[in-house]
Image 1 (cartoon, rainbow, N blue to C red):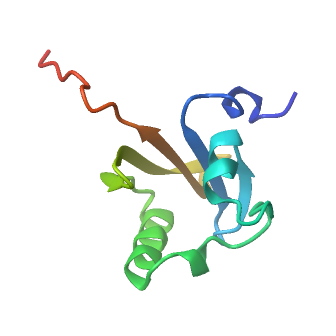
Image 2 (tube, helix red, strand yellow):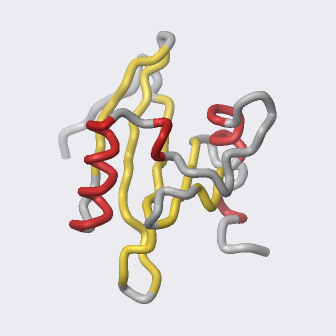
Length: 111
């Protein structure tokens, strides 16, 4: 069992990179979304896949131990994107991105 076994079959995409932006883990949903022509992105840099603005945000999260959260609508599918640092021995070791499909009729509660 590896440290990522829990994430393999969850109903969202989980992508993990190191401090250099090199992808170290992708769960099944992430691989289905991002692997191009069946070629794995694990071991490759995610930085070239992002705009300058996004690259700056990635660096900001790594440098400041900060989180980025937003929604997108892509091909008629609304998703929540949650990006946050993961740590090793208390130090930022990279980022994890969790992408969750949001149902159109998702309830919202005030508690």
